[in-house]
Image (tube, rainbow, N blue to C red):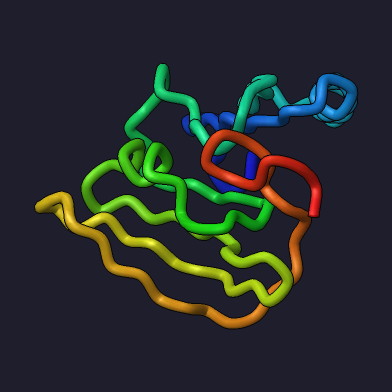
Length: 124
């Protein structure tokens, strides 16, 4: 993703496990990426300080689409998020200019669970 946004873009990534945050930062530094910030936090809450976002990519499966993430999309913004417990679907969410949303099921996927306030309470 850092390659896709180029030097003019910036990626904010959220990791809830301290060791994995440190590991990601180390790998990004070793690879020479300076346009990625890794934040230790609850990913279901998003990252309001830099919102709104044109794109959100969630890499863990949620029981439903967290409202805070929808709210942090800009008008015309797009989010992809796996939704479901065991049988998951990758959902494409598009925020329409008037604040409404459209959702499209892109098909079945398998991801680890999204843990947090608007996710699962513990690993499933």
